[in-house]
Amino acid sequence: MRKLFYLSLVVGLGLASCSKDTGVNAKDPSKSAATSMQDVEIPAGFDWRTDHMVTITMEAAPVYYSQPEQVKVKNAAGKLLATFTAKMTETTSVSFELAKSVKTVTVECGSIVREVNVAGGSGVFSYIDEADETTNDSEVPQFDEKELESFNEPLD
Image 1 (cartoon, rainbow, N blue to C red):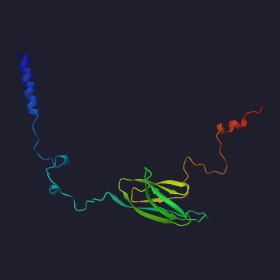
Image 2: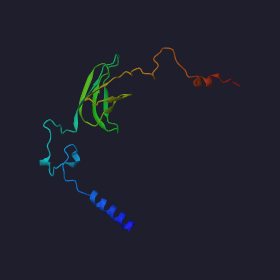
Image 3: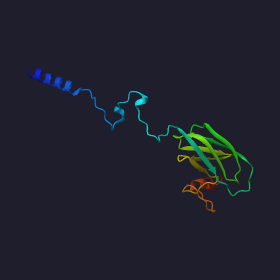
Image 4: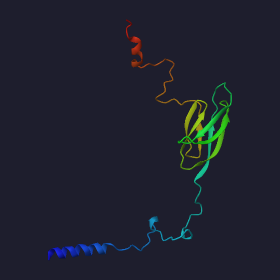
């Protein structure tokens, strides 16, 4: 008799908890009452575009070499986005359409390859490496002791 009582209690609670929620919750967009696109309310300033105009500025470098170079702008997958010609001695800008989801592009100018951040709609390409903790710009050559081991071996 107890088993029948407990079984009916579990079945009753299970059926009572399976009720359909008919109320619309304004804070949860997944529970919208919209049934067609005409029912959807879109704010007046909403931007439907998935791409935007990006400008990359190539700053002039203090060099004497003024031969024009072909510049290639590529995405992370290596797809060519833009090409143009630039001289290292002149500041140059290029603008092109780019998906808003793309935050960085690769700019190739001759043998110089740089990753440029374009998240804000613009980016800056520099021909000259910026000094960081991995770059040693001192005039005294620095050697790792392991590099010198092959020179210190006695000759037979």
